[in-house]
Every structure is written in C-alpha cells, then in structure tokens.
Amino acid sequence: MKKIMLTTALASSMLIATANAEVKMSGALEATLGSGETPATGTKTNQGSTIGWEANLSWDATKELDNGLTMKAGANVESGESKVMDAPYMTFTSGNTTFGLAQDTVFTIDDSTIVPSVDGNNIEDANKGLGIGFKHNGISIHDSNLVGLSHASDVGTFQVAYSPKAGDSSMGNDSAPSAVAKSGSGTAIGFKGSLGVEGLTAVAYTNNKDTGGLDAQEISSTSFGATYSFGNFKVGYQQTDYDDVAGTALTTFSSGAEAEAKSYGISVAATDQISLGINYAELSGTSVTSDEETTSITAGYDLGGALVSLRMTEVENKGGNTGSDGEAIELRIKQKF
Image 1 (cartoon, rainbow, N blue to C red):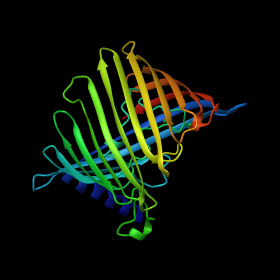
Image 2 (image 1 turned 135 degrees about the vertical axis):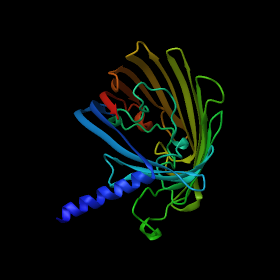
Image 3 (image 1 turned 180 degrees about the vertical axis):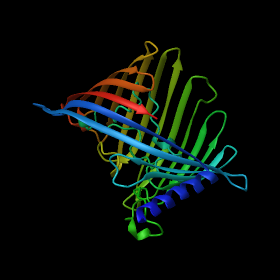
C-alpha cells in the first residue's frame, strides 16, 4: 500500500509540474570498442581491447513567469558520475539576455573547442588510454558551480561567469559552505559566433583561476580560434596560451612558466553518409621538455540517426617526455534521442 501511495504521489507531482511548465527529456548512448598502447620510450604495453559505455539523460523545463521573464531549469544523469544528478541550471531570460546559476551547462563558452571533428569528440577525449596532456580548456570553470550572464546578438553570444569556489562541482550541499573545501575562485569571459560571416564559427575566451584559495597563485589562459565551412569541407584552428602553469598538468601554479596548446582540423563529407577527417594537436612551452604531438584520423558513417566512427590516434612525446610514443584505435557508435 505504501508503494502504491508513493507512486501515486510522485505521478501527481509530475502532473502538477507539467501543468505549470513545459518539460522535455533528451539523452544519448555511446558504445566504444577500443584498443591501444601505453605510451613508452621503449617496449610498449598493449592495453588490450575494451568495450566501454557512456550514457546521459537530461530533463529541461521552461516556464513563462508573470513578470515577463522566461525561466528555464534542468539537470542530467550521466554515467561515470558519483552524483545522482549533475549539470544543474536555473536561468532567467529577457529578450536576448540570460542570467542564472549553472554547472557544466548554459555558460560554457570557456569550454569551447571548435576545431572540426567527424565524431564530435575533441582529440584529447578520444582514445583516452593514451592519456595525452593537450587540451584547450585546461583551466575552464564551466563544470564548477557558478553564476553567469549571457547576451546573444546577430554576430554571436557574449558570456561572463564567476565561480566562488572553482573546484566545487557538488550537489546537495544546500546552505552548507563548510561542506566544500576552500578552493580558488575563477572567472571566465568569452565570445562565440559567426561575426556576421556565413559558414564561420569564431571563439575567444579567457579564464583566470586562483589555486588553493591563494590570490597570489593565479593561473590563466586565453584561447582563440575559428572554423569555416564551405561546400563539403570544414577547416579549423584553435590556440590556447597558458600562463603560470606547471608542466603539462595545466592546473598547477608555477610562477613564470608558460604552455601553448594548438590544434588543426579538417573534415569532408565524401557522401551523404560517409565523412573523413584528420586532426593534429601540439602542446609546447617553457615547462614542457619535448613538444607533445598527437595526430588522429577518423572515418564516420551516418546510419540515419546513429553515427559509427573509426578513429586511429598516434601520440609522440606524450606528456612532454621525449620518445614516449603510443598508438590507439577506437570504434564508436553513438545514438542521440
């Protein structure tokens, strides 16, 4: 009887919410079959073949408020997360301007990597077994709990965000500051848009983050890039300059040390179903012994609602270690709904 009453109460609450707001559900399921080597300067260890899964389910609610603002809220459930839910957001929009609170959604321009990729994955996100250090968003605050402001225009979207504890991505610590350890605050300012040019996507953003709660230990990065589409081709370039970061970790303070991450990409739609692409990424700097170079070649086949891709990746001087090389291959199937 208690179970029936609980189910009835839950169903009633969902009906009440639906009556007051438009609620949508979406998600994705991704399966991979990967095999690779552990990068090394000598004999390499084969990691074997592994089948992996990644899944997420999101809900998003929209409601028109009596004062004329549009309120949106949502969160998702994602595999691999220790939290029951993550990526919450609550925003209020008037015209082209949006203000609100979020985590890993809405205010994410400082997480942007726009170099074209056939399977939609950044070069560092594919073949993770290689463990490369390269990334454009090394000190992004997008996945922290933050407050943000966004304004959309004809040329693109401008955003500014602030996280009082840039290391805090928790949920459930309602009114309990002591439940989250002190970490440095972070700010992000960015732009993403076409600049009024058809086929162009440009991005520019800057991040600043205090480490360990110490104002004197601030790491920063500036990223800029563009992708241009013409006919069946897409070409792109992006560069991120890091200041006061140690080695290839890109998250540890080291006064005066610098790093530079740059990547190139080109993709072509050979047919309506088949796409081919190549990506190259390089991480260098005063704190990197040898330039880390990663090359990835991808072929994709659109099944009509699901994408199958085959990616081969090679890294040289992984983590800035001279001669530490490795290779990997990955078959990926992704379905969105």
